[in-house]
Image 1 (cartoon, rainbow, N blue to C red):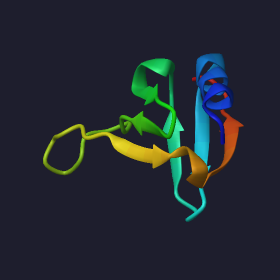
Image 2 (spheres, one colour):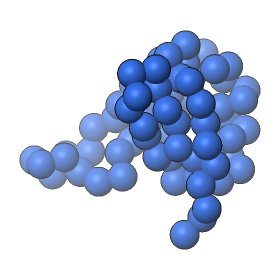
Image 3 (cartoon, rainbow, N blue to C red):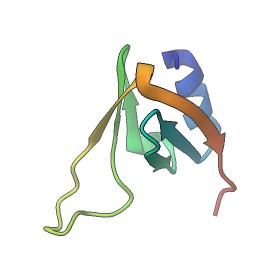
Image 4 (cartoon, rainbow, N blue to C red):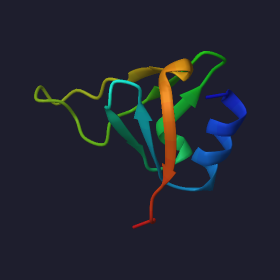
Length: 72
């Protein structure tokens, strides 16, 4: 995946990113992701068990697909 494609997709609305290990991440809006040249730093939809919000770092080279979701 390249940076420009990912940034455009995130700005267009909610998306689901599928990684090469099968894991999926939902990004509701551009406020929940920062994309640099090699990775996307994504905030989860909900806090973890301890109540903390910790970002996931998703390598662009490991992204398999981006799917647009219907906005809710």
